[in-house]
Length: 93
View 1: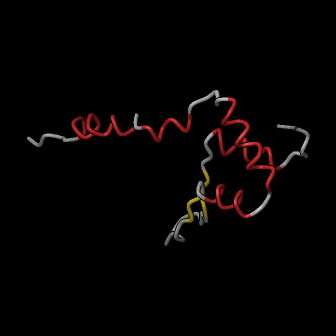
View 2 (view 1 turned 30 degrees about the horizontal axis):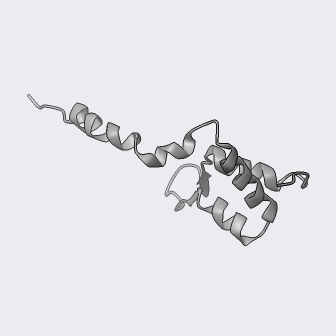
């Protein structure tokens, strides 16, 4: 009879899901984070593009099946940066 290691693996993997990097998904964002996202989006230059490109992964073409070029997954902060870049300035610090 073969014993599965899947439950043990799941228990060891769970703390990684609660790591500090998962705090980027916390909502609502603080006032300071919203302000920083707004100003980063208003730049509309290389710094904004470089920031948003960190959220995209480019994939190798598969041998069979659909050809998916890239996958993008934004945090709430990145969504605010993108939305800010699409709206005209109208906010004053």
